[in-house]
Picture (tube, rainbow, N blue to C red):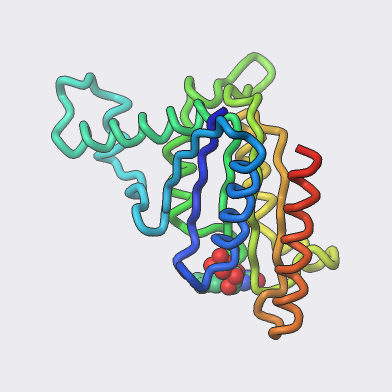
Length: 205
Ligand SMILES: Cc1cc2nc3c(=O)[nH]c(=O)nc-3n(C[C@H](O)[C@H](O)[C@H](O)COP(=O)(O)O)c2cc1C
């Protein structure tokens, strides 16, 4: 069984989402002795944002690529293979400015590829990366799950669910710690609830 573990928080040892993903992966390791884990710290080693030069590889044969294009195409292929090959993907996804960190978006821009993770059929898009389980460690300073008004401002969890659904992944579980900036008590309760959710989730898995 293969697991891909992604973190995207730039807060390193102060990060809540890194605590959540580490615990999820540790519990899964204990449960599945054969688990092969690939780890990517997208904050420490972010894929470059797409550019005309990087995307140019899709429009020219490989023997016309320059060294940067060759290296970037190899990285894209590695990221795609890691994602497609994983049975479980654990994603640390903090909310930054109502959405996800740019480093995680840069990873999505590499793996959302026509012909590899989706295609267009007669009735619209068809996801090609189904059959895997995704667990998202979601962290945010405010509380967005408690009212319609706040939910409407959430372009983090909903965005991830949409893009994962687009590539065919429908088995998505969110482990959420929110209200983390709303005082020490709120933070501690929210992290405690998330730890409990992880325990229950993995009992059921
Ligand atoms: C650059 C930046 C932008 C943020 N934007 C938001 C935001 O829009 N809404 C929110 O509730 N919290 C926001 N926060 C707070 C984070 O969501 C919160 O600190 C969370 O714990 C981040 O996850 P992490 O601890 O894993 O880094 C932001 C934090 C940073 C560093």
